[in-house]
Length: 183
Image 1 (tube, rainbow, N blue to C red):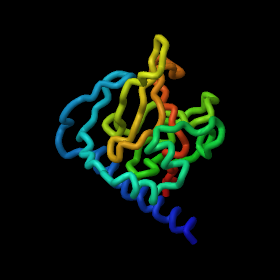
Image 2 (cartoon, rainbow, N blue to C red):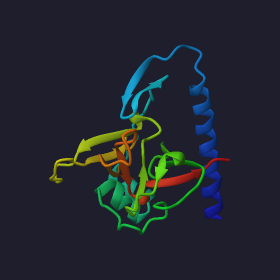
Image 3 (cartoon, one colour):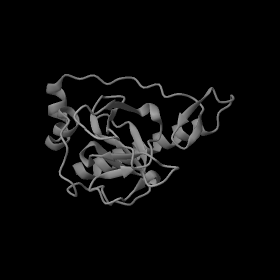
């Protein structure tokens, strides 16, 4: 029963997200600004109004599954090839496992064989927080990536994408994502 309720809530969430995106895709006013992006300037009509979700760690620990809590709240990394999305194919979106903010479109997912879910770019740049990884040594430092709404750790952004058009690769822990199929 919980499984069906989970699927139903996911479909409902994606339907609301899809309606929101359709409304944004057809603005009544001209675009407010352009956001620089790795593949050039991509028009962004209206910036996200991200309202932070703040909960005590005790509440996060109660509401999140153990692995998701360990990854998202303690910045752990799950074992490669152990998650459900690293080679998953579907039509829909990936949302934050903690606060359900839509983060990645499934069309942006690709399969470099890393063992984690990999994406070219997020739905919107404003939905992710980025911080340099101080523990990484090398000429192309990794960037730690987190959810802009709940501040949960998701994974890393690496500068080893598969083309000039997509120079970045978002390597995301499966435990930090929930796939919501498009109805």
